[in-house]
Image (cartoon, rainbow, N blue to C red):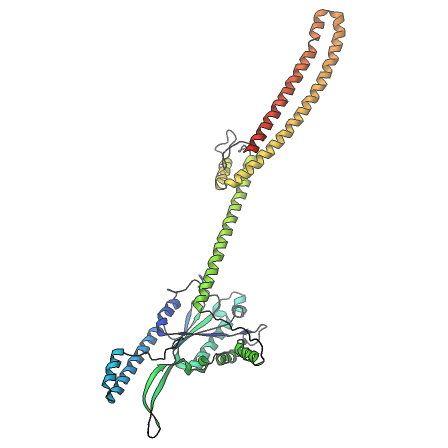
Length: 438
């Protein structure tokens, strides 16, 4: 795959950030993932990070070289003052000590640089699509090769470090530039006006490189260099800004670039919030799952006759059917009830309501059948009494006396049945009143 044809065009991303020697220790801690902001690092990266330019001791070598430059410049300065017999100036410089070999600026004398492309471009490689691993991803290989070549072409030996990071969301390359330059110090002859070089000093001067001095030129450079693998130049924002000003139009707003550490801090806060929300949702899901399991287990235990569905017990406790106290069916239902008292309470309430409605219907149906039977029996008794009365008139007074007791027996039976019905209705009304009260 030569990377020359793509349906979607992606821009190569290039950004610089000024750093100084004092930042190298922190930079190395982050590179080795032993300190600093590492919340964005993947727990299981597809491959280890790798050095592309420079060795493991590149930072120590850079600091040692800067210290040597300071000492060399200081010695040369003292030697020049001694040749000119500037004793007071020599004493002053000795008190001050060596100066840093760069002019103070807010950006610092060195540059950290990042090169990358949108993650989707790397993920579209067939090796990524079919899960063949980073080592077979041709787009990563092409991008890495072009990056190293561009760095060496643009900065030469002043690129002292470059590495490929594969343990973050998208593949990218970090590089550090230490721009060494030899500055000539001149003096103008007052008589002739001729400038003469009186000394040279080694300095760190980022502006020696056009791609650092002019950001648009840097974007042009990488855009041209990486076009060979199907990537484009970044957006021409400065050109659009100047064009809008020339036309008297409102220019597009300037893009505010966040420092890497600020961006990562923001992402860490967003990630922490998502994790808290996920934990909350997970807790709700677990609670609902426990409630559902409890309802199922108790329902099965009731169906198997191990749990009394209408017994009044404390919330979360189940009442076993007599003789089933140690059954595994009952014990399992009891464990689930303890795990989710809310689920146990819901199913117990449902069973009590259901059982109550079922028994109320059965009672009414039974009373209706008893009343019908009583009416039929009473009618039969009336018919028997009339028949026996006729017979009694013929057979004698004793039999007639016994027959006269039949209506009284029927009346007493009817009163007994009515009294039982009334007692049940009062009991039911009393339970309803208590439930409404509490």
